[in-house]
Length: 489
Image 1 (cartoon, helix red, strand yellow):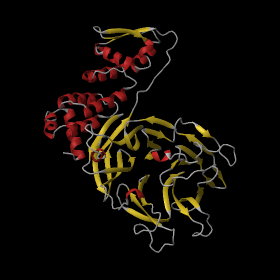
Image 2: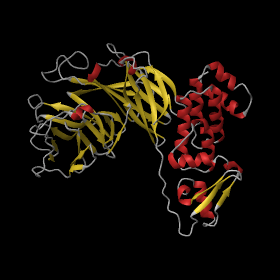
Image 3: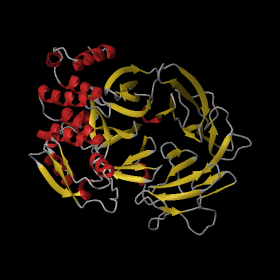
Image 4: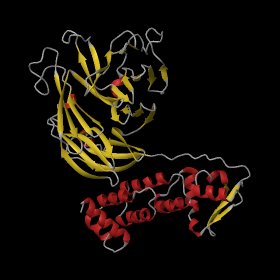
């Protein structure tokens, strides 16, 4: 991953949820420990700069308070299992709590309130915002005990959940679970699927439209049981002699965008893919087709846990793509690429699927062209070493970028983010950084000039930065206009 943004907070922070609308990232955080303040932080993702940090008019109650964003609305609610002063009715019958749900417009931060009795969770499923509440049959005439999934705005019941049963199956609009579900933190959704985390880190999927139920192992992303039905002869996993051997499911928490994080793993429960990471991930979002992760990073000097949770980071997960384009029959086995001073003969198979330029030129000539000599190809050795083993001499990164661009390398986007990461996180002076900025300005195929500009703006002193834009040229004029537009000066 490449780190593109970081901010050190002077107080303990906790990331609760996030979403992207257009080019803006909205992140809900809480600050402080004993007295928490809720904030909406907005970040311009095209420039990777903070736009605003505004206090939300909501009083949380620690871990009992939950935050979720659906569309352009933020839902804040506190799950109270017994009577209390905040968000509940003192006149409510025993075992009944009226939970207050505050719904904010994430742009304007105006709000409305709704009340849900015995609230446990709020989810979006099948395009509907739904709540899950708990019902006791001795307090609610006409309803049996259990958890009920209901439409938030129409209050019609979608299904009922009963846990602690002997078997797991779906029948008569009731989901029976053979384990005790973590209803507040172990329920997820994707499209029409209601997804339930078991205590042994497997996932139960229920399609609420057709009632299809299956279980998937998170360790190997394989289905354990398909079309689970009552008395189908294949009960869920049993560890040793204990039905609930370990509570491994509690190690995972939802980071958004259909992903869970726990035990140094990111698990995509939509596509059933697991990936290891050394980051402490607290959030995930998609922007311009790429996964971005919000994470907290340990300091090099390991000062203290309190310092550790103050550093907020955003990194992009971008990997090299493999292009194994087959070579047509009759094409040459070897070609020569380079300048008249530096030319290299190589197998066509080595470069054909990696350089769109070579691929196009060979295809246009129908395999008759075998030499590609151009004075601009003088750094071809840097490119070939990079293709061969990924070797990059960072002192020549600008030259590698330029020759890779001329070769129309299939991983130019990866190289672009490598340049951004290099300027941001390595020891360069502003003149060295400016070389990369001019390079991207003249060859900005992935529209990352603004991102690199503000990386440099934040990294170096104001005096040094102003010195660099003092000369009159088109790039500096564009920089000045953008600085005025974003009001960072």
